[in-house]
Image 1 (cartoon, rainbow, N blue to C red):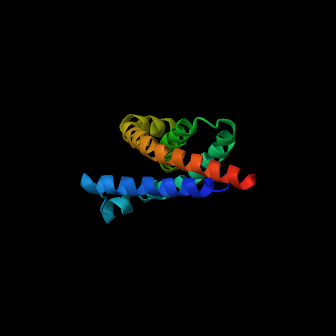
Image 2 (cartoon, rainbow, N blue to C red):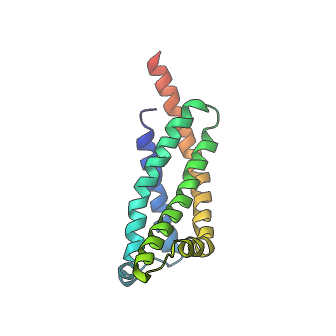
Image 3 (cartoon, rainbow, N blue to C red):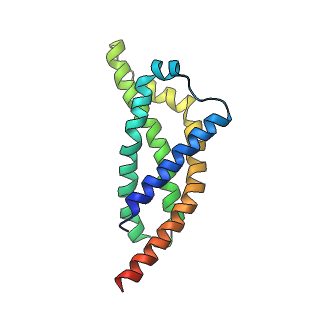
Length: 153
């Protein structure tokens, strides 16, 4: 199980490529003006991906050793929940920053707004990434376990 960190990094990278290709297909690649206008959201998303990846790594290392037959479920859950956590991390940070900007607490408004308008998008990406990435990640976790068990004997 030494390579779980590498596997998680690889599947997060594949998820980001998938997201970029999906946005390119539907014609929604943001312009520089959009990135400049919403720079806080972009920076928060970029920072949240490795943080959530570390949490997913800790989750996988904890449960892969215990649940040896449920690799797909664990992989799906880790990748799916990562998308939801990225959304709510971004909503929380934007809520805190806008609270300082408007001098009133706007954290709940931010969480509600992101839940209403973006949860379904992140949920769909999470389901697709969880199914496809979870399938391949579970295969690699099984192969990794076989190699590790074979090397230990």
